[in-house]
Length: 171
Image (cartoon, rainbow, N blue to C red; front, side, top):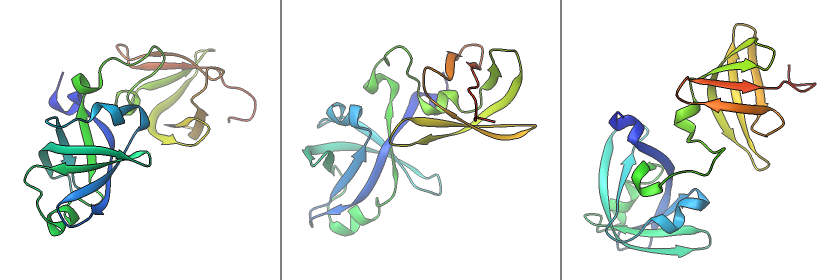
């Protein structure tokens, strides 16, 4: 597995908290408990610059984390992290439940209907309140597929394909 595929996007640094270098981090809910003192997170800027930072202190606050990283000592240091993506390793996260996938694993896979029609490839995953939506782009344009059991029938990451059932109104 390449290093790119061993790191999973987990959330984002929202803003500094206080004057001692702490930041508020918004993580996917099921990952909050996995961030502990001593663990390493990867922080990526919008320009793609990557830093590996060790968590010194962490506490939960209103469904988010307040994190103090080693080497981030001042509010100005913390301000440099604002808006940066937070990444964790697959090993930190552990195995997913059956029927769940990491976004980066399904972006780019082929999408076929249960009737054998090739719709295109997953270009993006929209995380919406009700459920995720897979944006599929193919030769006939864009199709939005809700990530529900009624529509998504099978995902085979090894073969790089997704089998879907198109319900009325999806085209």
